[in-house]
Each structure stands twice: as C-alpha cells, then as structure tokens.
Image (cartoon, rainbow, N blue to C red; front, side, top):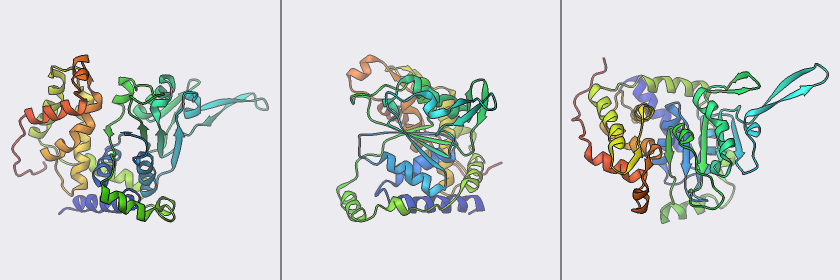
Length: 322
C-alpha cells in the first residue's frame, strides 16, 4: 500500500467510527456523504422526517472539526437571513457588512424545500463559487465550505420543488433510510441516556481535510473508466423517458465522487465499482422525467439503474498510474 492509500483508509475509519456512535447501521450513506465532502461538493439528503438527516450532518461536522451552523428554512426566511446584510453606521457614514450564517465550515440547510425559491437561490453563488455578493461587494467564504441540505419528499405539504439549477449544485442526493429492526433496537439502547452527539469529538480539522481533498484529486482514472462514466451520463440523455439528462457537470461529479470512494477504500485508482456506487447519488436528481414516466412510477433512481445495466462495463486490468 502507498501512503496515500493508507491515509485514505485511516481517515475514513476515524470518521466512520465517530459517526457510527450516533447513526447505527448507516455506514454506506455516511461513506457517500463523506466522499461528497472530500470531492469538494455539497450533499442533499432527502427522506421522511425522523430518519436521521440532521443528525448525520451534525455528526459529520463534529467529526471533521468544522464550524457548524444550522439554518431552519421556512416560508418567511429571506435571502439576507442566510447570506448577511449591510447595515448603515451613522457615526462613520458607511455601510458595514454583517455576515450571515452561510459564513461557516459546514452549513446545514434544514428542510430547504420549505423556503421560497428566492431564498433557495441565495445559496447558488455560495455553493458554486464559494463567495457571497452583497451591495456590489464580493465576500469570500472560508475553505472548506460545505452545504448539507435536508428536505422532505416533495409530496409532503408545505414544500417547494427545488429548481433544476439548484439541484445541479448538489454533488450528491442521498437517502438515509429507515434502520433495520436490530439497528433500531441498538439505537434505543445507545440513546437511553445522554445523546452521544453532545460529546462527539473531532478526529481531524480543516487543514487535514483540505489536504485529503487534494489527495483525492490525484487518484488515477484511466481512459476506459473515463469513457464509461461519460457513457453513463450520455445514456441518461438518450433514455426515452427523460426530457433532460445529465450534462458535463454530472460527468465531472461522477468522476470526483468515484475518486473519493477509491481513496477511502485505500486504492490509488478508480474502478468501475466505484463509478457504479456513485452513479445513483450523482445522476438521479439531475434528471427531468417525462410525465409518462411519473405516471408509470418510474423515478430518476430507476432510470439510473436501467442505464447501469445497459452500458457495458470496462474490463478491469492492472492499472498503473502514469
């Protein structure tokens, strides 16, 4: 094993061991969420209330040693409540910018689809460019900057569908899911007394996380695997039940998440298995389906699974990074 591979495995194990004290039996969704952060992206968690979406975000922030801020999105929330506002100071006859909660390490945008589209769009610049523009002045955000947003399914009352441009800013869309019976029994025992999130300590910090993100970008991707990823994205655009498929940004996201998964598994190269694990979370939320698909009960995840079965998988060979 190389130092990079060992570092990836150790890094992941440290984080997983902490998060698992709070969320029982959720290592795969934790691994994917961590891969999204290591890939430099943002994560959207969609699931029914009470499944642990908020707790996963809090546990990741605590484990990674990032400054954590939570914003509860509601219909009356204004964009300035998120980004900040300039206040006039009569004494100096100047405007002073008061940073909003978005100036943090990890922002939890809780129930993001309960806010109006105007407020949702306040996150676009920050998520895409790592900055906030207010009154003609650009304010840079600290690095790393991560948004983990939660939302209830759009069929629930009082929710607004996120626009395509907003969805595309999220590297991954994941579902935590209900625990198994045995995991739920174990959870009841762990949470009988003090909640473990209250004493969850950091296993790393911002500087080490940034170094890990740089290592992830160095994970080797060979030509066949790149073609496989591009073919998967292109196949979503050609699916008969899709009106808008994944674009080049989706292919880039697929590559970066696959690199992070390989790094966490201790490998210096991306395999087709990494791509297949990343594909549902990366591609499904970027697809716009035809009305007929919805009437038939076909979802974005279903389309991605169909594509994964149809697109030929490259034969794995002995890979040597050049």
